[in-house]
Length: 215
Image 1 (cartoon, helix red, strand yellow):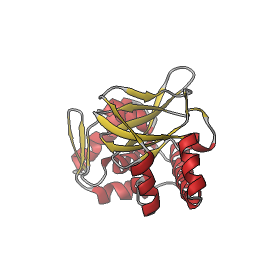
Image 2 (cartoon, one colour):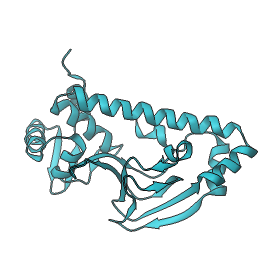
Image 3 (cartoon, rainbow, N blue to C red):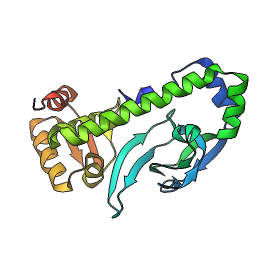
Image 4 (cartoon, rainbow, N blue to C red):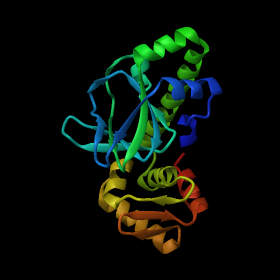
């Protein structure tokens, strides 16, 4: 599943709901939208910018889960089970967002009941994506795991504005492991590396690495 699965590629009715009922909000780079375990009941749409999704262990260790790009929909868990947020979301760059609170969304669903099925579909896609991330985290060796994450984060332009230490947070390994693998890929011509940037130059090679997993 790619990132587009969470984008507004659903019905025109759902798009109209987002345009009609959502409240605008802005975030500056480095500003936190909400913290892990913070109570919130809003569903969000990202219109501009980049947001990082991460979780923290009880000991304070960070594991970055995702980068949200424009048109990403997120926060849907609060629509079905208002309570503590399961992750922290921080602006990587200046962002423009919209949100709708649970009560307002329920009122819209009462007028247009078919919207409930679409929101459930969105939640289902998120659960399948999270299950895949968990599977990769548990079963894939570091190189295939890194290849999968680099391809995912690079998107269509093949570029990631991220340090190797930050990438290690996403992959769940040490910076030294990420540095060693990326250096090997650079020598092979699979990627280009510069300060705070990774560029994929041979996505097919990384796909092969991602799929080369033990039986």
